Length: 85
Image 1: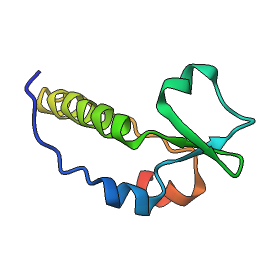
Image 2 (image 1 turned 180 degrees about the vertical axis):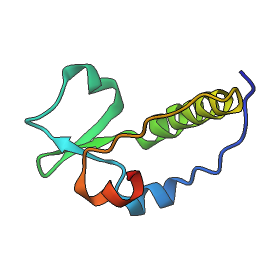
Image 3 (image 1 turned 135 degrees about the horizontal axis):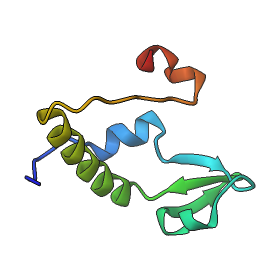
Image 4 (image 1 turned 45 degrees about the horizontal axis):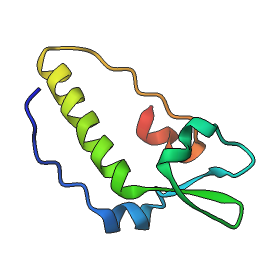
């Protein structure tokens, strides 16, 4: 897999609220390595790790698209319904 540079900006991710996870009562213990803190009953995800894994995921998707693979995009939040539809 060829490594590429993706313009993933930490400040933009923070503005978008990507670091806000699920409530602390609704979590899977396997997610512990990716959670950096708890704030007002919500887990805060580690954005540094998120950026690393997002970059790897972008590489995988890019390579699969180059090979003509098809994708199914699924969203579970009403706020993103227009982006996914």
